Length: 145
Image (cartoon, rainbow, N blue to C red; front, side, top):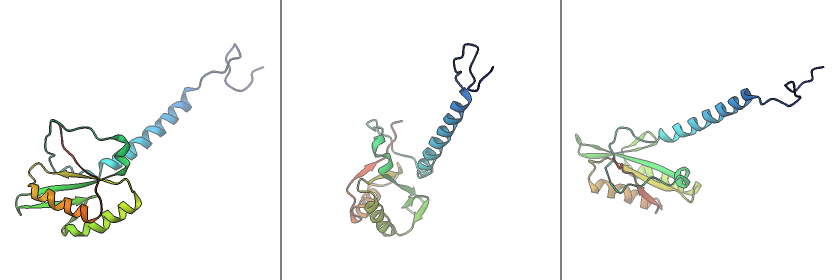
């Protein structure tokens, strides 16, 4: 008499690999989805400055970070502010958005991703905007290569 459970000749249950593969695929799809959503906030059109002292970011802070991208447009001799794929002509329009995010997350850190060609005055300008929003935790993105 053969019973259910996939037992072999010895009566021991067999290990089923197919359900394990299904679970691993679901986990893989989940992690790829959340990772690519985070990557989309990064502006690919700018070149980060190179710093030999650049450190990897703390993984514990990733979910509390907000990226602010600053491109340098040499044609108009001005910085271009991009946040969440939206270009801000008036940088002060970013203040209420920053304040709202700060209300939702007390541990919010703003990461400034400035173009390598960007003058320091433009960095100072965005830091003033972030300060007006009441955020003191600011980091700068750089490349180590």
